[in-house]
Image (tube, rainbow, N blue to C red; front, side):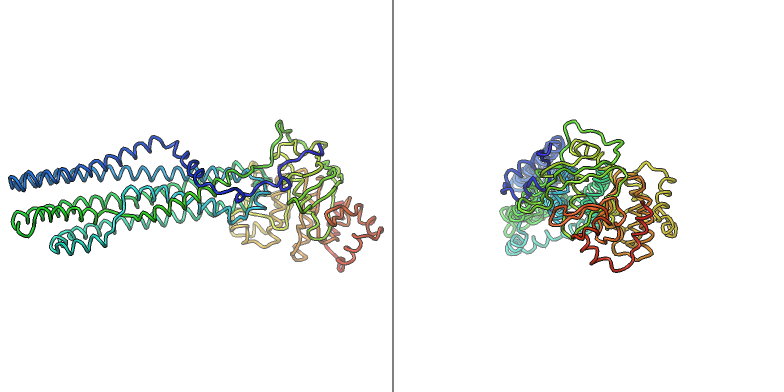
Length: 611
């Protein structure tokens, strides 16, 4: 099995940006998201087609009214009756256009909701190696800004292209030059338009504020989840995080539908005003053509009708639509690049459960590198038995943390194998394996939630008594109960409203509550005062009792009583043994220890008690 290779940096998977650009393929993939919206899409097309048909019929009705009741019979009562028919046609066009536009709005938000959800679920499955290679900021941008770009094209770009392009300034100049009185008559409808714009704008502003708030919450949820991916995967909370994200995503979707629904009312509203303007101009121009035919000819009236229609309708520049289209395709390609990236650490075809792990760990000739040209570990071999404490020491960058990452299977080895209780860890269910391990980092990660929710993260079914007992054991209960809201205190992002020592104690309490069989501590007492360090070490001593433990330490005095020390240098184990054995050997470890041990340390007593 030593030659078997899993997925990890050593597999040299392609980055999302490594693939050639293919905007057409991105466009085709984006079109597939419309598949589930066939019914609503058909309704939208029918409504928009009906609106277009009614608008196309209107000039015919208008021309017939002019011919039959102005030029031939000069029957004003019948003429104005036809105006009522024309008004009814425009009203029908308004209703159909509103229905079709709102349908597009719902379709676009549903598509974006699914696109976000699928992207988030895919990110949850990605191996940690992916996040090492791709910047977090870029990932967040793909899931927010690029998705938003696609959304704006589907909703605004398509809807705008259906309404056409209009140049209001040019039309206005032409109308004033043609006939000022009729231009002023047309402007009688402007106050109506302004009232509608103001009323709809007020609704839009309110809805937009809510949407921005929800989108902000969505971005924060994505950033927090991506930043805390190790914690999520360590405690196997992917499903729960998806549920939480769905709630935030759904709120953002609903807020977007509310805002865009209000915003899109501007389009059919201006179309209605356009219909009213045509009726007003036609009524005035037709009457003046009868009363003053020398000045107001039928041709003048017909020309003004065309100008009035073009002036009042909403417009959007073709270049803007085209740019929006290209931006959307580029954004879609970036999103699909995430979809195409390699997924999580692979599961065995028939994974073994990790229940009842005792904690017998073996590294057999393990080799690993983050890139092909830079090996981080080479020929790493050691064995530790259940309940023993193994300390890993060495200079910064020697590969100490990488050993732990391989044990947690955040990466897979390039060479050799790692066994737990005699079984290659690649044969275990990866989530169950990680659930059997507890990690206390230098800087524990906490979510923006209550202390209670953070403590229960690795063991949601724990009782209140079990949670409190874990906090007591970790020396965290006292300071938590001194907070105004106790365990219901809301933590800010990453728990930054607590001190570093308090965060460390809570991290130990969370791990205690999860009750792992294999414990990993990564310099859990760096940069804290002596009193806090003593509290932490008391908690660490209790945490390690009866568990297979690994300690990564820069302070060599912290591990003097470990069962074995592994000294890592130049990416290999250069020395191994107990503290006394290595000091007697007078090698590299003795040099490190002599340089660093200049004052009494509180860890020594704690590890002595742990033994």
